[in-house]
Length: 70
Image 1 (cartoon, rainbow, N blue to C red):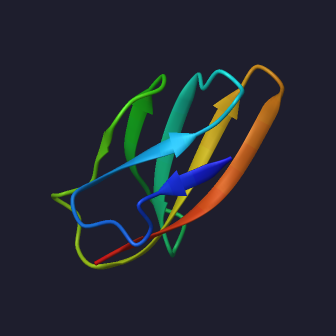
Image 2 (image 1 turned 60 degrees about the vertical axis):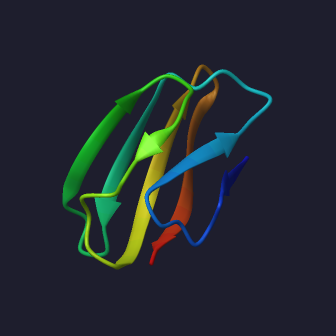
């Protein structure tokens, strides 16, 4: 699983061979900022520059990716 583009400016996508149920985006302190449903384009244009963590839920469990916002 890979998030691209990374660093991101306005939105990112996740390249995955497994179905994505949802994506939750957290800031560096662990605060939940956004929740996205399913696969697609994840808009983060309203977020400040920084490091975020995308917790991806699949039918097989969870995966966390670091996303850098420019």
